[in-house]
Length: 245
Image (cartoon, rainbow, N blue to C red; front, side, top):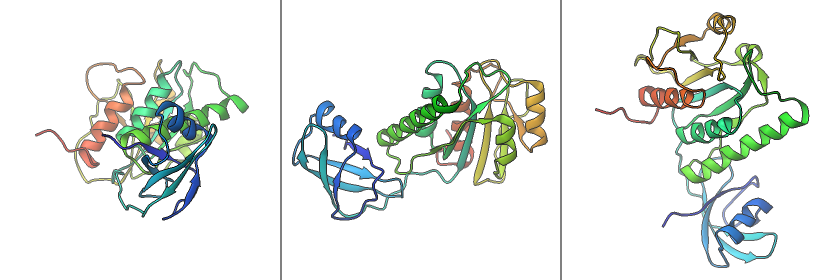
């Protein structure tokens, strides 16, 4: 039986009595119907995790007590920062969830020339919170103890100027290069455009900022498919996903 894993923003320690936040409390008590004496695993994003036991349940909160710290890490040695243009519908939710499962360290939603979604001000802030929660939920499911950071919405030009990594790639189907094994980088920045793709000017700007053009194959992949395929390939080359032999 799989252990229920819950993230908390509270700083944890051995033997701590913790009143869980409202959302995970509702999930444990109402959706999973857990009660006093049931066990789970807690993590606070600082590394490792804690076994915990439920000691009290009411309509709004679940109280637990933690056990000893378990020092386990499931993070890839490859630091991947995904910069991806905001897409319509639930495509962005999908990308955040699956990119988290594949081990990205950070994700920045971008505004590009062909971005069809208009976000600003309070609405943009709520979207960032929403995507951060999706990343946290994905960590609870996949076993990661350090949720990736979902950064504030940025223009592509701003991200290009501020992003640093040992290796940088801009993904587009008109590129001629393919990912290849070489000297193993410890950090990668990956730029992916929207449904309409990046413009020639945006691709040129990325290349001038040190991003190598990258093509995955002969087929044109959707904006929600391309980054996931690229991340899996990069993790297989230089991360913690073993290549097929």
